[in-house]
Image (cartoon, rainbow, N blue to C red; front, side):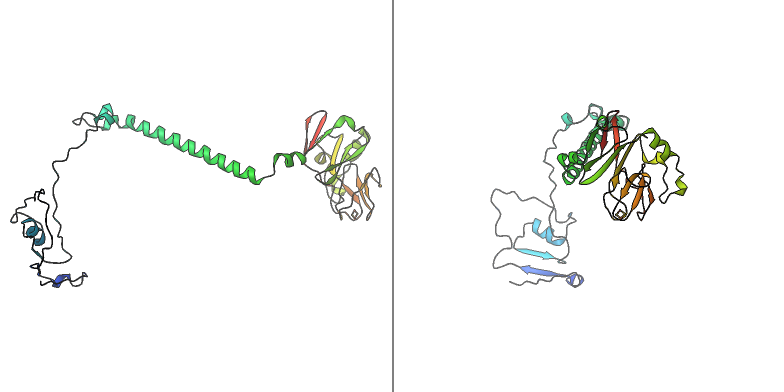
Length: 271
Ligand code: FES
């Protein structure tokens, strides 16, 4: 047997006639008897020499011009039946002799509706996933409930200050008298260390809601004491007025106002 094998496109131009003589054993051992060999006219074929020789029945000998050249034999399977897709086609395009353009918009509506429905469903699912993840990371309902304080305003008489515990901090709720309101409203904010008008510090003039933490170093002031009738911090002598504004002493800022609202006339909700 004589054979020559080379690979690589760099050698391809120099491989002009590689002959494989398979005298000892054929390249293709045998065809099943029932297989009918396709006939390809060697003269008319445009296939490369190897294909021509193989298709002509010389199974023991193959010739090719190049290892990189085409060597397969292609068959036209004209005996395959094309399935009938008519039941799956729109009525408007059943007739192959008519243009499908006039019915294009109507046929696309279904696809658009399906796409829009899918997009809406995906968006809703994504939104639910995000909300679920965020609610899982956030505080639970019982923790949130602990973070709110509900106060019945009718329990606090006029002129009194009541101290509550809210989120582990002291909270002052003061039911101010008309005299206190008038006094605090008359104060010129420009004369204050931390300028704020009384209207900015209350949602209802008769109710003052502030954290009971001195803005100096965090002591708890005493209600109804001090030179201004509001709060007094005995730690270093800070005086706050009945609006919780710093009026004298080392504290730099007014008492902090928490988030609160009045769900109704009788209730105060803090947090
Ligand atoms: S902590 Fe209140 S005056 Fe210093």
